[in-house]
Amino acid sequence: MSDSILVGVGQFAPGADSQENLDQIEALAERASRRGARVVVFPEYASYFEKNLGPAFVAAAQALDGPFVTGLGRLAERLGIFVVAGLVESTGTERFSNTLVALGPTGELVATYRKLHLYDAFGQTESDWVVPGVVEPPQIFDVDGFSVGLQTCYDVRFPEVSRMLVDAGAEILLLPAEWVRGPLKEHHWRTLVTARALENTIYIAAADHAPPVGVGNSLVVDPAGVVVAGLGDEASGVAVAEVRRDRLEAVREQNPALRLRRFRVVEGRPSAV
Image (tube, one colour):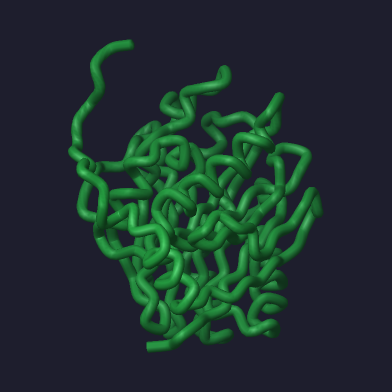
């Protein structure tokens, strides 16, 4: 078990060419690896993206053993790191899954996560084209003794998702996103990521699409809600931060909110509003 690890966020603007997206991921992962990162997280929809969801996404969808995930596995193995990115996953239907994949340093697929809360907000209807994920026990994976969990973009607006992962033992949350630009959206992004870290006393590494579609501002936040590394509106870049066990323990000793709480997450749908 390590006392600390370095975690990186890679920011770029994925497009319609899956191989070109892989090439950009490779270049950014190499930069982060040279700085010592053990895990690097990339945006949602990293395998394929166009501004408007539609049939082209279904046509471009790939299986978990397809060329995009296979390429990520080769990259992770070559660099000896963990790589996390968003996949447009085929389902064999007229919709696809919005899936996160985590590849380990031997090239194996160590975890998947299918987005639970689809972006049917701010004038968007992601559910027209995406199959929602099934609520199931979280897939937590180990990085040098740190327990790591996954969630996607709009999920961060639902605090139960983060709390469910923390209840399963996660100490670091990785959050790929395609955070659409708009009034106050950058403010929402930074506030929500910081709040989830602070209320759960965990580290969060969040990677977004670069402008002009995304807000950028990929960042790493510590358990006290302090931004310890981040980017702005760069078209492409990496930020790397140290995740420290002593910091995690000290914050939880000072603020034992997880131990003092009187409620737990229960699956179910709310009343109509």
